[in-house]
Every structure is written in C-alpha cells, then in structure tokens.
Length: 439
Image (cartoon, rainbow, N blue to C red; front, top):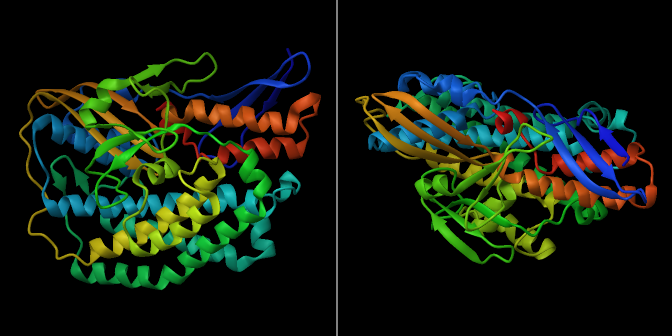
C-alpha cells in the first residue's frame, strides 16, 4: 500500500511526522502521528530525594516546566499527608495561570495564527514573519500578551523557565506588595489587547468555516478537573463526561491513577492512555470547557455565550480549541487579578519529614490533564508514573488526521502543498506537546 509522509510537522512543540496509509483505490485508510523521544524520566527520578524531584521533572519540558513541578509537589504532599499553606496554593495557582497564559499566546500566535490568516497560501508564507509584514500591530499585540504571562511566571516562580520558587510543602517566598501592584497594573493595561485578540480569533474561525467543519469533529468523552466555582487547574476532583455532556463519573486523583490504562504503539514512543470503565477521553482546553460548562469569571463567561450561540454546546470541532484557548486566557487574566488582590498570607511553606507512602498529583496543563503517580520510600522516589495530555489525546488526534486526510486526499488526490497544510492545521488544533508525551 502507498504511503504519504509529512516530515517534519511544523509549528508544534517538539518533533513529529505524519504517515497516511492509502488503500488500493488511493483513499486514506489510516493516519499515524509519529513522535519519538526518550521516555526515561521515570527511571531518571528513581532514587531521587523529594527535595530534588521538582528540578528533575521540570526538565521534561521547558514550556510546561511549572506544571510538572506542581504535579510532582502535589504527589509528594499526598504521599506524606501534608497540605501546603493557603498562600502557597495561591502562589502556585497564580504562576500556573501565568504559564498557561504564555503557552496559549504562543500557540495562537506562532503556531496557529498563520493557518487562520493564510489558510490557502504557500507554506513559505504561512508564518509569523508574513503576518508581521502584513499587520505589524497584530504581532506586537500577541507578543505583548505572551510577555505578560512570562512576566507573571518570572515574578512568582523566580524564573521564566524551570521556576525555582516551589518545593514540596509550599513555596520559598511570597511576592512583595509593590511587585503585586506592578503585576496588577500590567494586567490592567493588557485587558483591551486581550479582548480584541479574542474577537480576532473568533472572526478568523468564522471566515474559515470549511476548516472548522472538516478538520476533526470528534464526539468523544472528555476529562478535566471540575469544581463548583468554574474552570480550575488544580485542587479538585476529575469528572469524565460523555459526548453529549452526560456525566460518566467523578474520580479522585487516586482513583484516576488506578484506572489509567496505557498502550504501546508500533509507530510512536507516545503511549496512548485511556480510563478503564470510560475508555478513550479527550483532554485540553476544549475538554475543560465541555466538562465545566462555564469558566466562572464574568468576562470569559460573557464571551462564552457568543461561542455557544455560534457553534452549539458541547463543542467537538477541533478547531474551536483555538477559541477555547483565548477564552481560557481571558479567564486566566480574571483569575490572576483576583489572586493578586487577595491579602498575603503569613506562611508559605511547611517543612516535610521524609517518610514513605503513595501519592497522586493532578493539574490541568495548557494541553490538558497531567497526572503524577508516585511511591516514596523514606523520602526517596521508589516509583514514578507520569501520564501526559498527548497520551490521552493521541487516538482522537489520529482520527482527526484521518478525517482530514479523507477530505483532501480521497479518490487518489495527490498530497500537494495545500493538502499537507490542511493536515498540519488539524494537528495544531490539538497543540500537542511532544516532550511531555514521550517524557
């Protein structure tokens, strides 16, 4: 059977390629997402003291470094039966919203904005440089938003990449009052840019209706953290829902870890993951929205009503994930403002006494649910298991790829530049993170 290879897939986090297998009639019969890397961090962490675990797992992925740190810290605290101080929980959440804000800004700007602005252009023109040539202000605006998220992360985490402020048991230091005010002022200045960018993303997707309706309409089960106040990225149980929004079960982090089932693939180092009793689930911004139904913050929920009126609910079109990203950025902005406005606590850290136990930590990383399952023995890692967002999303991503391939390659059509761009666009709607997926 003939194959079509796209190598490399461009404008994603990490290195991957695509293989589309054609049947005898020249129609796509299978689509594989091929990603390779060293899955060694479970072995690298074995024997590590809990004081050294966070710097180790942070190196899995620079862009998601904080989320790996916090998931690991939560797992350690769960194993030792410790609840960090309230102020530490606030600082962690503030930093995570900052990194999510930054990651979504990069995904929308560098990775996906060229697809939305120049869907049919030559591949050499579909990039951030071409956008800058056409409309310099759009790029400046989006880079300003990216810089804002980076600034929050740097201030709260101590560094913009591989933060140093968080440890099992809490945080090393608080934010001085004057720095809180500086961050608040910067956030206030960025609000008009954020709202305007949200309108731009929605407008571009309306103009690209063909892509929205062709690049994956995956009616799948969804998994995300859920609480009563709205969308959250830490400190809650998980909820799985069916394709029509029906509840399939609430799971504690420990229950979720017990029910994760991983499968090796013959074409990738990414091991696909599903939940026993539920099956395949999709995670990420779209899944978080479907699970929670609202954001729980005024501006984001007002924008959401327009989205629901346009595309219905639950939302299953993969390309609408870009809308979910910008709405999460608006929610993150509102939540960061709220956290910065809270009175500072008196304590940020509890000292831990190394002992033995098992713990699970779950956070919502930008690309979806990230789960750490940890066994400690006298304060050292005996076993570590990590389940990353791409593992949950792999099967849905490949089905979206196959659906997209059939739309542009059916009947023996050649894989010209436009067809290749179409398939890459389908992948970027998931914003897959290869380093996290192969860890």
